[in-house]
Length: 262
Figure 1 (tube, rainbow, N blue to C red):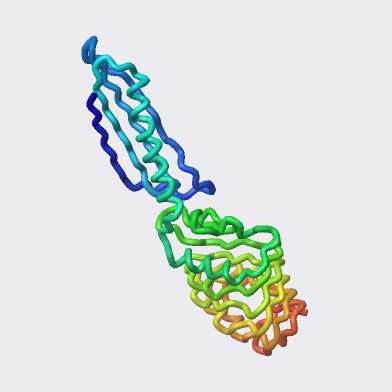
Figure 2 (cartoon, helix red, strand yellow):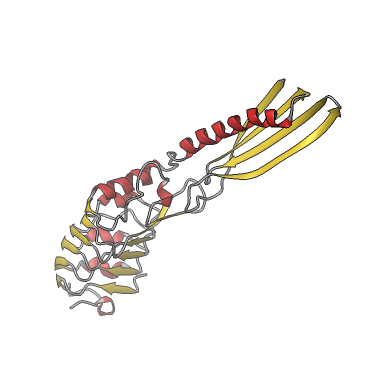
């Protein structure tokens, strides 16, 4: 019996789905008659990971007089072997290590997660499939939203989130985060910053005004102190601001149309 196998690999820019399970895209098996004593079996299998790579395995066997079951008995283990190897590979590949490590730093700052909100935040799952994480649809996948409200998370919010430069929404309200507001001055795409109903302390950082696209700022129900930065009036796209139930003082130059504090 003669066995000829070819393995092809090519990139598949399909965006990541919320499930990282591999799936067989197509399976085809057909017979070609060459002579009464010889038949050819062609088997093609495509394995596409969730937006990573596509592996095509094509095996062609000629066998005189052997039954088809014997041919399939040899081909099937080869296919399963390649399938298993690809599964291990794709589960640990992160195209954007900067975003990946920034999220891991955030997780390290969480010291209590009673509801298991971060239970799938591990190296075995692509970070775009982690709970509360949303990414761009094309590689290299960048984090665009981090939404983890009402999970009773406790700890400090890592300033590493300031490295998620594609982030447009940071939604962490109604948890038990304490400590200062993280430095987010690099996030010029940030539109929603919702950190209310936590235990945040300290002053509102002046650098927050570098988030030039900020439209919704919600910091109410915390333990913030000091004077509201007058530069907050420079956020020309700001539509809603919530600062009530803190210990803040109003800077006299802040435009009254932005003021919503008790």
